[in-house]
Image 1: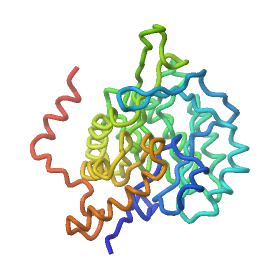
Image 2: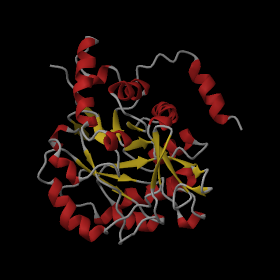
Image 3: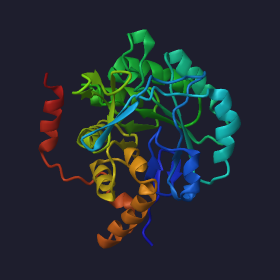
Image 4: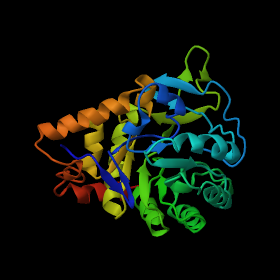
Length: 314
């Protein structure tokens, strides 16, 4: 039997396939056995009730997706009373995604969701920090370090820092998160983008701009996962445009220990289950006994120096 289990810090997953936050819901339990997944990652929650952004919130762009959902949330109270009990019926680890407007708000919510039944907390530091004029925490190493330090003090659970592609300091931000106590890095969130209807001359999203996900994001996210895996000693979870097992394997070879699947689930609700089966078949065909044998095996030769140079270039 081929082994698919991987370790994300102290947390062992039965396989490296899990959903990306915001693309997974309890409704999928009517479609497939949720215990087949490596982990469950909830939709991002906030402390209080939140409506989200004005409509339209989603549009298609070149086979990818542009969204500006705005993290609608029923609040932490509803989450603890209704969502956590649902997932306690499964053996698969539960990862709770959280968001906050300030570092202190983030830390308070982190403490509130550190309850029995929650196995790890994914901190969406890709979201705007109102104390920094709306710039995402993860754009800068300094703000990343500050918020992660407060989060680390707020919980003893594993912390996964979800990074943003909207930065020119990928490796520095990754190291700042690691130094502040992150147990893993989720790389990466959506990239800020825009689309315009040429007939109405209006933006296709009600919030003007939104996050690009799907196949168009994959080369960027793959590059970031590679950089973060080499810049830090903590596990990297690849995220961005992963639609097939070939995509997942690319991220694993680049250095990711696991992957998250997002937009593909909207197209095919069983995409993750198919990916798990296909990963097993790929490893068997390659004559490998464990998925761990391919993690970080990219043959980069002397190209590493060139990549560092490109990142540092203006």
